Image 1: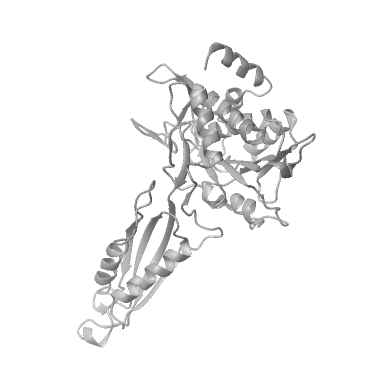
Image 2 (image 1 turned 60 degrees about the horizontal axis):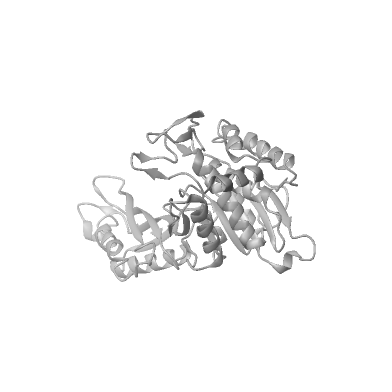
Length: 398
């Protein structure tokens, strides 16, 4: 941006400074409880003229609708979503510079995802929709069970809630995560489950009198290896993966084992669903092992759906609005339209058009950033992300 443009941006953001917000937000520990961070977020929204409220699942929500001659029905309902919880342990806030001399904020949550939250807040507080509506919906537990996001899209409260939660009826979703201001339009899903092979116990001296579940592992693992042989690679995400990550079986060294289990990790690509994968995997193993062996595959039990794979058309107007704005703001820093590198709650909002965006990295050339002891975000990229969100909202709702 030119100096004049940066001056315009500074004038527009005097009421809310995303960097000042981030400097206060990162020191607030939110790895065990989000209460303090949620209170700070609510106070910030109220102090800047928004009307926030907290639903029964702990989501912080606020909405702006078009005023004047237009109504909310004249345009899309755009939902801005990210999370305020962080992984342990808490890493204290520090201000410094990186090897390139760029100012950085270090500390837990600086990039995942309080930096993206600061950018979304800046856009939400700055925009005055002339058509459609914009909602901010910030969830409390993305790093664990996603009960907040589940309540947002299904109107279903978490176990601790005391009443129904009104769902967010969004047409477009912008999800804050560290993408280094790239527009991410797809991500793999992650499922896990346990494959159980059942036989019948017998004395090891008479092995033919039983059905050996451990011996059946050989054919079962072969079926797991072959499972994706005919799978088509996704144009952005590539092929799915299926990895055995654990095995158990047998109770006594002189007994034919009656049960064996394999733990499996699945990284999916669209259009596979968790239930579709479960049924297909069980059928493939059933066809591969002896008929005398029982086969059952169960997904790991959890109170909310798994994070499934999602993709958004790279040519959609939401993608163009974000990527064009990022390129205009970043100057010689190009905005790539690409997949996101981790499973994300963005999958809960699909198939509605969804883009993942924000400052910061999951990892850089020196290793892990998000979730690591060296977590950091560049201050200039926080400002770039904030201005990108503001411009994208103006183009979609103005």
